[in-house]
Length: 111
Length: 378
Image (cartoon, rainbow over all chains, first blue to last red; front, side):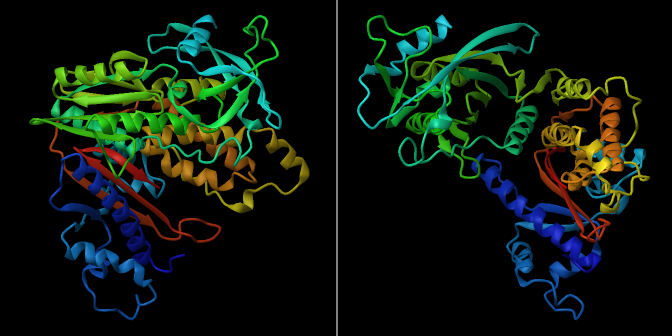
C-alpha cells in the first residue's frame, strides 16, 4: 500500500516499465528495435524521484527495489516525460471520467 | 462422425490391443457441435473425446502445460501489418491435438458405434494424442514447435507462440493460438511457401486473408491502409444473453454517482438470497473478455465492480448493468490500426487511495505502437 501520491505514481511507473521491457524485447526479436522509449507521466514529482538519486526525507520509505527504474533511465532504455493530466489517455484506466474526457482518451489510443 | 472416424483411422491414432492386467481403459464419448462461421453459415461437427479426468497424474501424464500467444503480441503484429501493408493470412489445423505423439501408455475403450466386429472386447492402445487427454495440447505444441524450428523459424523468447523468420530483406511472422494461426509477411510467395510446408506435415485448412481471431473480427481497408479489430458481434451476444439488448445507452462505463464500497454488501439473508440469483460472475467474465481484447475504455469500471465478486449488493449489480448499457451505446467501438510511425509510447497514471474500503491506489498504463494501443492495464 502506498502512502503518498508521489509513491502511487512511482509504483505505476515501475509497473509500466516492466511491461515496457517485455515489449522492448519482443520488438527487438521482430526487428523493430526502439531507440529511446518514452513513458509519459503526469506527476512531476515521480519524474524527479526517478531521476534524482538524492534521497529525500519524505520518500525514504519507498522500497529500494523500486529504484531499478533509475538504472533503466541511465542505460537509455527509457525516458520519463511529463504530460499534462488533461491529455493523458491513461486517466481513463484509473478513475471515472466525463464522457468528453473518455472520448479524448479513447481516440488518442486508436479506439 | 464418419469423417472424424476416417481421420482418426488415417492418422493411426490407436491400435487394437488386449488390455494388460493392472491397466485401466479410459472411457470416451462423442461430442456434437454446431459451429458458426464468420459468414454466418453453420457447420456440424462431431468429435471423439476421451474422458481425460479419469487419468491419473504420474501414470497417465506428467507435464501438461502448453503456451498460447498473448493478446498483446497479436495486437502488436496487427499494428505492424497495418503500417507496413503486409499480407495477413489465416490457417487452421484440422484435428490439431491428434497430431501430437504420445509418450505414455494409455488405453481407451473402442468408440461407441464403431467397435470392430469380432473384436468387441479389445481396447485401443493410443499412439497419438486425442482430444480430452490432459497432455493433448502440450504434445501438439511440442510437435508444432519442433516443426517450425526445423524449418528455420526463430521462436521469440518474449512469446513462445510467436515465430519469426528473415527472408532476404523481408520477414515472416507466425502466431499460433492452439490450432489457429496467423501469418504475416510482405511477400505472398514466401507465405505460400510456408503454407505448403505446413500442409505437408499437418492437415491444414487455408482460410485465406484473416477475418476473425478469438472472436474478434479483423477488417481491412486496403486503400485507407487501416485495419480494424472489432468485437461488436461478441458484445451484441453478451447484451442479448443478459437481456440488455434494448437497454437505454449511457455515455460512460462508470458513473460518478456509484461510489461503490464494501458497505453496500448485503447483510440480511434475504438480500443475499436475492443477489445469489444474479449472474454477477458470468457477466463480469464476459465483460472482462471484451476488456482484455479490444476495450481498454471499460477496464477501470470492470476492475472496480470485480472487487465485490464474493459478496455483492444491489448497488454493485446496478454498476455492472451500467457497464452493459455503456456497451450498448458503444457496441461498434473498435481498435483501428493505421499507417503510422512504428514508435512505442507509454502513458502512466495512478489514482491515489481511490478505493474506498482499503484506501488502496489504482495503477494504470497504456502503451501505443504506431499510435494504437496494444497493451493496457488498470
